[in-house]
Image (cartoon, rainbow, N blue to C red; front, side, top):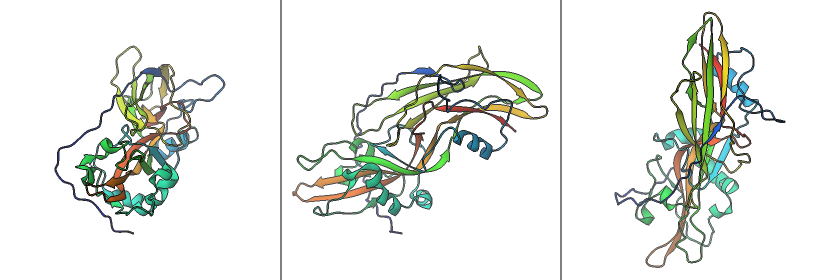
Length: 311
């Protein structure tokens, strides 16, 4: 494996990019079937309560397909893990040498490094917090994406994300548990808002709010953001809320889980920098920054699957 290379991070003033997010909320639900098509977010039929993660995975995966590798064109402004992601952890599942081979295939030829330009790096950072660029006054990666090229007439600075699946269909909301033998009713609801940006270097994504609670009573909402991948061909769409009644078997605890129809991907935020300094010297490099991003299932039309769990 190639020894990681990193640029020093200087404590210069941070320059941030500008973005305006426009959220258009629409009510949607996870249970009923659309006319003429089976909904990939329908809840479990009958009175089956899943006991294990494997049972849930098997059920959801029959309806919601996730690719083992995904990519996001542009900076994934939505859906990034707020916790620090360390290079050592990413290397265990997705070595940067492999990512370097995947970048042109997943993100396009703009990330190729022409042999006619002196190349440095690759610049492999040690954690998601190491995202400042010393060549450009310590701008952060998000601010740099989509900026005009330093080369006159050149393309804007390309950026993106490449990663491998590490957590499919994560839990986003749960109901209160009920001890059986009992019958209880719950209302499932999710709203989705599409994010748009005035900055071309940012990726498309959105925000989902999901609730599972008693009909007629307010219930706390869980919120999460997500990115759309380069393979996305079916955006999440509007449905309506649904009331459901469940029978909890005798002697067990039962609850409802809302699972995202997507997955967490671990990999790298990447950008290509083509730079000409004050002396007229031109050089280029690829920068890879450890990251973890929640990405929607590419061919799925709704954001949630609700399942019954037993403990």
